[in-house]
Structures are given as C-alpha cells and as structure tokens.
Image (cartoon, rainbow, N blue to C red):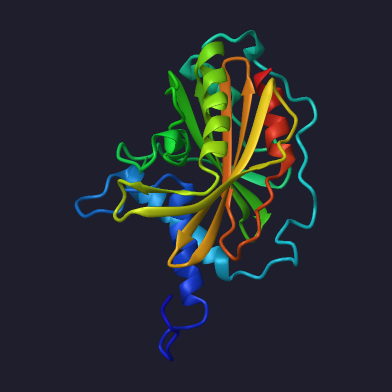
Length: 269
C-alpha cells in the first residue's frame, strides 16, 4: 500500500477504489484497453465514473436510504413459473422498470464486453462468469438494467435477467452454490488489464423469494483495500434474476434492498 503524500488528497485513493469497484460490479473487466470506444463502452465507463463520484458524497450512518423502498402495489407476472424459456420480448416486459420499486430509478445498461475475467481455479469459474455478467450455462436471452436509489445515487444496483429454461436455471444456482463453498479462501482471475485477486467468498442470508434464491459475497482486493461485492440470485421457473452491488467506501457488506428482488420475482411469476 502506497504512503499518502501531500499531493495525494485523502479521498483520491477512495475515489480510485470506487471506480475500480464499480468497474468490477458492472462487468467491465478487460474493457479499458486502448482503441476507439463504442457507444456501449462509453456508457459503461460513464456509469463507473458516476459511481466513483458518489464515494465522496455524504451518507447516512448506515449508508442506507432514509425510507425503505417497497414494490409498487398491483405488480403482475408474465407466467414464467412454468419453467419455459422466455423470449427476448418477454424478458423486456418482465424486467424491472421505472416505478416498480419506490425510490429507485431504472436505466438500461449496455451488455458487458465479450472479454471478461477467468478464474485461475476451475471450481471458481461460475463466480467469474457472474462477475462478467454472463452466468453459465449462458442464457438464451438477457437484459441488463442499472437500478439507482434516491439518496445521492445510493444504493447503486445492477441487474441482469437471463432466460435458461427450468433445467438450465437450476444449474446456474447449483453451480454457484458449489463454487461459493469451494472458493471460500479466495481465488485469482485473469483476463482484465491486470490479474484480479479475490480474498474470500461467503454465503449470505438470501431474500426468500421465487422458486430458489442464493446470496453471497465475493471480496475483491485493490492494493490491499477490500472491495465487498454482493450478489443475490433468484430463480423463477426457468428465468434467473441476478442483482449485484458493491460497497465503495469500506469493508462492510453492502445491503441489498429486498424490495428489488420481491418486485422482480412478482413480475416473473
């Protein structure tokens, strides 16, 4: 860890850390190389910069919004509980949109770049697949959204909704459960601009919604600074909703608003 000098403001390291954490949480690994930027790359980098800027914004003692978000009354589902493979149009209708959860704005998020991280240990590959925004087995259709809370842009949560069919969706969660246990002591990954180090993986209490639910934390390492990344994965029939967020300020586990998962499960049922 470098020593802070007079020309390095106290917050500068935290802002750099925030940008790195945001890049990880948005599946941006490997997307920062040279060359001409596509519109998708530009929008993802803008989102990372916005997340970094919020690291210096004042927060409540718990870092949570002052009012608990809640699902909009009257949400209805599209019947995904039967396990069929949803088409792209159905996913577009089912994914969370503006007004579905109080206190949150919803924006489209560009798909992650083709190049992503690869875990050094085979048993940890399901974890990097999710970090890359592409849970395996790969979905036959997918949508990406950015969900932003109302207090200084917090919490910032990314979601991707993937259509697999009943067997494939179940495999996504079972592989992740196995990987969380097998990779509890951490792992390294390559494929980005430089190797990434993850110091630990642990299960978290899930939000009990849908047909199956899993929550876990992957702790990244940025020059000795911990970057907690939290993932909540919910299955409804053959569709998987993955939500993730990062604590950009300290080592505390960031809280995932349950209302987001509850609303999404309702819209899929």
